[in-house]
Image (cartoon, rainbow, N blue to C red; front, top):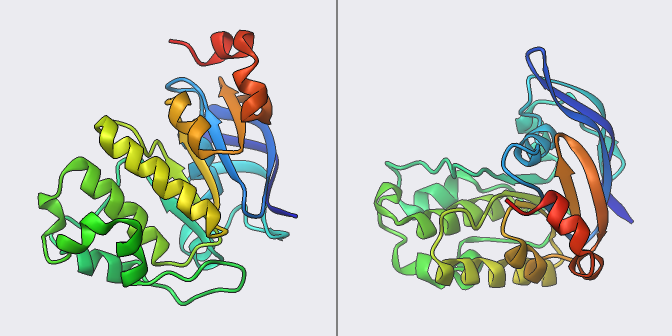
Length: 235
């Protein structure tokens, strides 16, 4: 069953069109990577799904319910969680206070998360729970942003470049965390440039280039398709 369906999605910043008839679907419990170079349209796609683009056309449905055009807060209440690339933590609040800000009640069809459960996913955060978030390292802030989003008990989580700028050991931790989320039944869409990270974490790949989907298939199919990787993913 498809939890997310996107059809003929076109998104704009002012007069500039960024996405062109983007279409894909994500099944319940699946992890899908949205791959592409810088400026290809990955972040714009996630922002469009989350209701953060100033102008768009097309159909976006979450569990069959149209959400295109809804404000972001209503989309979040329907069970779509978003981890932005710039993290957007509340730097003056503690780790625990940041988690409390994200809390929403459990919802049908989604794993149930609370403070102790997110500490199980990110044990390092538990020792830092009274620390002001602005004093965390970049990797710790990324863990906190994911944990805060989980506190909303999302049915589907959007992660924008979760490995960007992190040390290799932290990237490994992020990969394990995403694998755990998938085993818990959470549906995940992540945008990435790190192909190795995406291949470990995800079932399927979408490649976007100049605002258009150029490839859709399994990770195994992408791994076997050197021409596609060279055309759309190499720098």
